[in-house]
Each structure stands twice: as structure tokens, then as C-alpha cells.
Image (tube, rainbow, N blue to C red; front, side):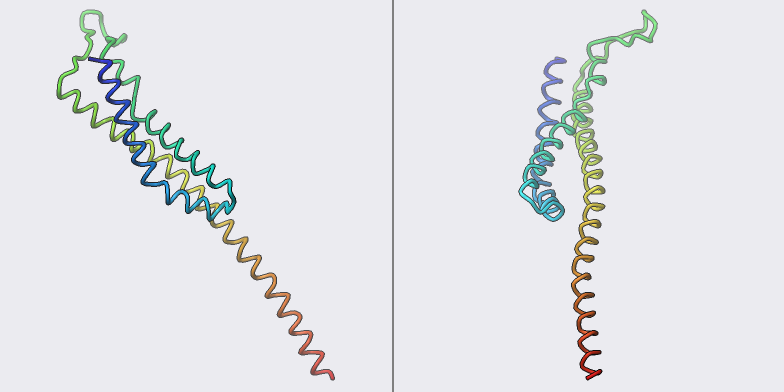
Length: 153
């Protein structure tokens, strides 16, 4: 029964992670294309998809929590230590917990990614603004010199 629960939680966490990675594939790609603007952004997009799958599965399948179904707690007294039975209610609870923990782990990872991406976007944007402001300043300097030269003649 425990092996079935382990397989179900693993499969469920993998499916939820895959669905989330599919849902965020385009937004992550757009952000990376804007920030990196190079062919390497595709490799980063693939890495992010892999990271979503790894974080989702590792968050959703909580091995230390599942151990209580095969091992009695060591801190309890010998006569009171019992292995928890896998009832249908426990199954439902574990399935629900797997989905929530998978989504929660992915949400934290994506939050970290989007905060870093936002900072990178600000840096890229400031760099672009600085680049476009420099030619204008040079043009206005040239125009000022031309206007002064025309007035002096």
C-alpha cells in the first residue's frame, strides 16, 4: 500500500509540475528573450522548465512525511508507538497535500525567478535609456554649435 502511495504522489507531483511548466513556458520565454536577447535564452527557458519539474516533484513528494506510514515514531514510548494506517481519508489528504505542496514549491521558485527577472529588466531598460539619451545629447551639442556658428557669421 505504501509503494502505491509513493507512486501516486510521484506521478501526481510530476503531472502538476508538467502542467505548470507548460502554463509558464511562454511567459518565461518572453521574459528571457527580453532580458537576454540572444540564442542562449532558449537554453535558459529549457533549464527553467527542468527546474520547475525538479522543484515541483521534490516539493510534492515528501519522503520524510511518508515515512510515518512504514515506520513507527522513534521518540514515542515503545507501547504507544504505532504505524499510521493508510485509510481512504489519509489517501485523500496525501493527494491533496501533494498537489498543494507541489504548487507551493513551484510558486516560491517562480517568485524568485520573477523578482530577479524584474531587477534584470530594470537594468536592461536603464541601459537602453542611457544608450538612446547619449546620441541625443551629442546631436543637441552639434546643433548648438552650428546655431552659434551661424549667429556669429
